[in-house]
Amino acid sequence: MKRIVVFCGSSLGNNPVYEEQAIQLGATLAQRNIGLVYGGSKVGIMGAVADGALQAGGEVIGVLPHFLQKKELAHQGLTDLILVDTMHERKTKMNELSDGVIALPGGFGTMEELFEMLTWGQLGLHSKPIGLLNTNGFYNALLQLSHHMTAEGFLNAANRDALLHSDKIDTLLTIMSGYKPSDKTKWITPARS
Image (cartoon, rainbow, N blue to C red; front, side, top):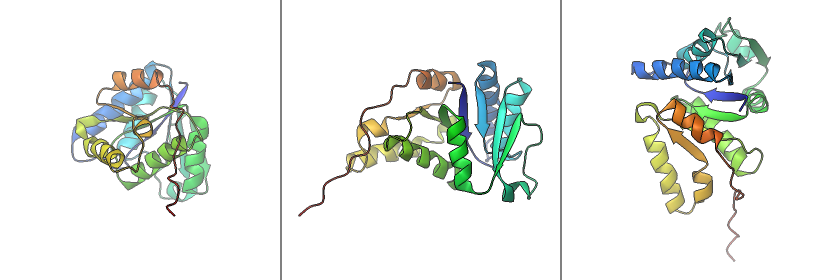
């Protein structure tokens, strides 16, 4: 993987471990010569992951909509800051620039970005590894929900298992490096007559 897009919160959260892990992830990516692509902001754990990578000498590309730049949220020290018009263009550009995806803790925006990438993979639009850095068990409920979706017949196990996860950065990157996409894509249940 040459570049990984990281989706994460524009807040720091209530536990300092989220910021610490974000900084460490950025540094680890830089140490492994993996470029960071992210949302371009200087705030929250978004800013922390960028700072961690930059302090370790890594490449950091931010992708930010103009309307957020106008709110003075843009990180000024990036390798490159790409400005786009819409949130959809932002996700498209991030996808184009990356070979893998990691989600750190975040809110609705992080979930929306993560689920869009999962959906695109499920539909066969990309074959990138997608991982959760499950810091402090943040994603335990989501992982449990994914198993419930499978049990209830809304998500096949192969697509569920495409959501890689670990609470350790090195372990997650190793799992992602060995990822082989399933040949199963989204199934559609035929209509009942």
